[in-house]
Amino acid sequence: MLEKKQVIKLLVFAFLLFYAFASYHVTSTEQDALWVHLLPLVPSGLLFLVVTKSLSVSVKVLFALIVGCTIWFISINQKCFSCLYLLQYSAIMVAFMTWFGQSLLPNKQALCTQFSTHIHDIVSERLARYTYSVTVGWTVFFLLMLVTSFVLYTAVSIEAWSFFTYFLTAPFVGLMFLGEYIIRKQMLPASEALDFMSAIRAYQLYAQAHLHE
Image (cartoon, rainbow, N blue to C red; front, side, top):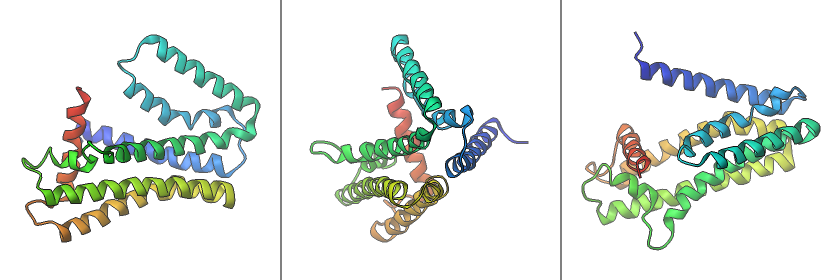
């Protein structure tokens, strides 16, 4: 029998799969139902609820008003609804690019180096250099995804953009993880080259440590 955590993971995966197919369908075909305009707000809304638990009620009310005005505007100007999908995807890419990129600034520790500190007691200079390079790699990756998205949306077709966004983004992220893992095994000794599950564990420990800050 499945455990509670496994059930939750399956439900999350099912939701993400549904969202990908539904979003691809409504962005690549002409749809005018109101639920279509609400769909891209679901992930943003869920993310907002997670990151704003400590904010005041007035800020949350302001956000609700902004969302309401956005829905109203799109409902009367249906040609703009696909822009909302583009803005949401772009915002996610910019957020990740900024998250990795800002840690590369002077007097800051690269994000991937921060991950490694939760697994290794001592981060060697070699490991620090490598994790710095990986952080640069992820920053560039999200920048390229952002640029590709804009090019497809503005210069190719909404169908090509939608397919790239909802069906190719995740595989590209997976390939990025796989490529970095292969390089890591070649560049670092076994004592410093984390396996895949240890890398995930490092991120989980980092997230737990910063969740309570």
